[in-house]
Image (cartoon, rainbow, N blue to C red):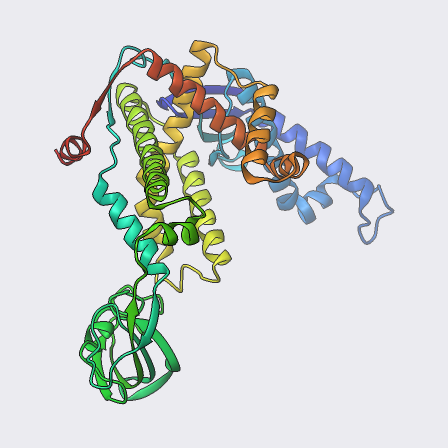
Length: 439
């Protein structure tokens, strides 16, 4: 066997392999000898049929089997000789067969891991969103909590429904004059302005009185969850049975005690303010980590195997399917085209694969590892936060490759912490970050 290797790109190599005709013939003879011991040919005792007869009867099949086996064995041997570790199955093309040009030759195009020497991951200047909580945000959250505890009382006889009022109705919808399942209902309650119904429906009920009938004409959104209704015009015949006025509780100490079991309204405001701050810090921290990753990837351009990008795309798509299935939905229900969805995910998948290689390269360069003790400590943190037994959470992570995923997450945290420690971090206003992102 002769093997030559050619680099097509940093992550793709072409192996050219040639197997001498004598070797192919030798293997064919051995295969025919083995076949002679196993088959019975009419007119000959088992094991006594001439090879010429066997070659005439089974030659093509034997040669195909021998060629297939020789390619498989020589391919593995060529990989070993050339110290190539493929990341996916090779694309093999036969160039010549023994019956035509004497030797058996083929090419195998294989994708390999990129060689990454990380650079530019220290001494960076990074920008992080400054987290501040405005009193208007606390007021808005408090008002939302207040509306959640609103009560409704019957409206005066001539009252015209306004935003915030609750309307109780029967309705029947038709599309192109035909009633459809799911477009009719009785005693349906909706708060006008809540956005619970399709766009235009609640606005059409403004000004309605109890006992009034009204016809609502609108069109379903183009991205409506039911493809058979998406973009189609519909007519709803509505009979309003009741109109109720919203009554909001006073924002006093008594409200605070009932709503959140705190001493008074100021303590409730403090709790809301802290909750907003924590959520803002979580979002700002997540966005900051993504910007750090972007900066590292920009400083380290390298190519990655297309097979791994496709695998990442498939993994992302499968997770989306599982998430939708848990909610009783599918891609088809949302009118999503799988091919177009994969195309849209291509850039994100390539970024994820590049970051996985760069992350490990930085970890290797810095001698960063994740210990079993760190994994165990993280599982205990999760169990404590969830209020569930450690053994239960441990069993969950030991299923499938969840421990591996947890280790990867911990490694990423340690690497990014190391990068940030060696960098200068500037806190800036959110508007400044948004303007920079739009440049």
